[in-house]
Length: 155
Image 1 (tube, one colour):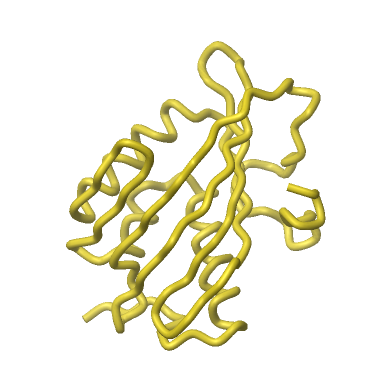
Image 2 (spheres, rainbow, N blue to C red):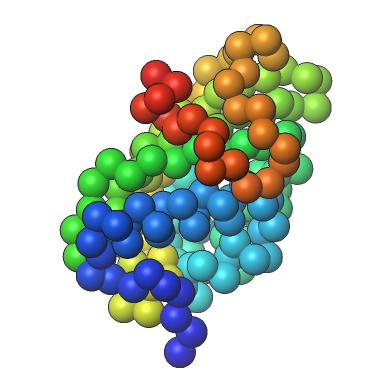
């Protein structure tokens, strides 16, 4: 059975590591690779979409990143226990008409013993922003370690 460290039960340190690994994965915008972090029978609620397996998660992500252009995401640990992590996050993106948005949300994650995410429940709100109001300015891909996080950006 494949494992994905860090494994539950989580400590504060390993929960923070898990959150950053998830952020890095999503910022890669590589749906195939990101989907490998989820169990084959993963369950998601993302806005009005319900995903019931890893293949659907991959298809969801491919479609998402075709719509949400120049996507950049920051996640922050909110709470954790043995096999669950709650995060808050924000991401910036624009549509194909150059309309910019900052999307805010919370996610609740549940992990299998092998460290793969079994359940993901997301609540998201989209705020239209002017391009000049963007706060996420790193090159596409992994957020730099010295880039401010959500708390430091007052988000």
